[in-house]
Image (cartoon, rainbow, N blue to C red; front, top):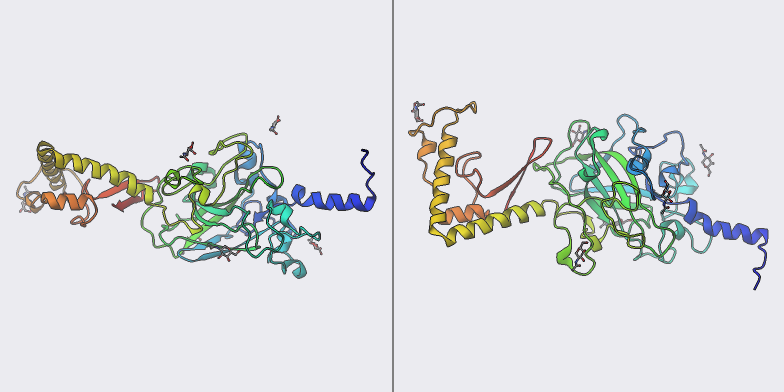
Length: 386
Ligand SMILES: *[C@@H]1O[C@H](CO)[C@@H](O)[C@H](O)[C@H]1NC(C)=O
Ligand SMILES: *[C@@H]1O[C@H](CO)[C@@H](O)[C@H](O)[C@H]1NC(C)=O
Ligand SMILES: *[C@@H]1O[C@H](CO)[C@@H](O)[C@H](O)[C@H]1NC(C)=O
Ligand SMILES: *[C@@H]1O[C@H](CO)[C@@H](O)[C@H](O)[C@H]1NC(C)=O
Ligand SMILES: *[C@@H]1O[C@H](CO)[C@@H](O)[C@H](O)[C@H]1NC(C)=O
Ligand SMILES: *[C@@H]1O[C@H](CO)[C@@H](O)[C@H](O)[C@H]1NC(C)=O
């Protein structure tokens, strides 16, 4: 059978069908984006999908040398909501200059029956109030104000929205336990990877200067791990803070899954819908489990218990040997710190399990007991009671 030649109208129609999935994709639009052009209200280059690129081409969408205007900041309110706008073109957002284009509900638009679904790479019916195939998007943060110092593994996903991208206005819930950003602010990335049932495979990632406003957290985020695939076996999900997905590029992928096995920002990779509330869970579980095992061993063996008490006494002596300026001075056996009673077995167990608060900060009894500490590059101490 010979295909009928396309009339110019049909050709235009065919092209119109093709165009959205070829040229129109999605970005999260915020003036604090790297690559933001303040003079172009119809900007669309940042939506270009990332595929098979070198690190410099995909990292910060290739815009690392094109920072946002001084003072532009994506503000993420601690314990609150960041109201984001995802769209195929800046013109559709409140940052465009043509109001009639800004009224649509969806991230992308199209005149054909499929509307903007092509650019969203989903099998959901156009204008569905409850999309189920869009796979989610997320925002990750790195506590570093100098963008040139950031490594991909420095980012931690802090918020996810499972129904993104679909509606243009997307709410991202911000965890309430984030520490404040350093002077000069933090950096963030927005990431999305779509399902395989529409269009070619690719990754979406844009970079932003960001800040956590009203932050009251006192504990630095632990090192984030790669998010493992766990669609069925939930015990296989990565526990605690997780990195964004870096996938399908020539260099520095952290997810090595194949072309038809894209990683998502949803429950299939252990991300909850909304604020990520498990950011410190790995510190708690790994350090505490180790400590619980050690303590159990100690209780099973009287000699181990004796050794523990000796260690405890030595530790106390070392603390007692420090003067107020932190200089080491000879141990003073008359000092109250040195003569304070060692905790009982029961107290020791409770301390280690975090059921009892340690005595004075930095005192002999607290050192090495009941607390997991993690020193970070910024000097903050991540500490978690088991
Ligand atoms: C942006 O696009 C709108 C219509 O799509 C047009 O009216 C306007 O002139 C464009 N603005 C610029 C700066 O190109
Ligand atoms: C990836 O890009 C390189 C050149 O940059 C090209 O040679 C190669 O064919 C591309 N691979 C795929 C799978 O597109
Ligand atoms: C995701 O964003 C939508 C708006 O697009 C909002 O209605 C919904 O509450 C958000 N979900 C979460 C978990 O914040
Ligand atoms: C970040 O927000 C805090 C308010 O919570 C503010 O004090 C600080 O100056 C902001 N940092 C930057 C770089 O804007
Ligand atoms: C657990 O995750 C690893 C890494 O993604 C995968 O290779 C393994 O098959 C998973 N196991 C189960 C039981 O899902
Ligand atoms: C040892 O500690 C006691 C009690 O704090 C104090 O009175 C005494 O002066 C200290 N001795 C030395 C040598 O620092």
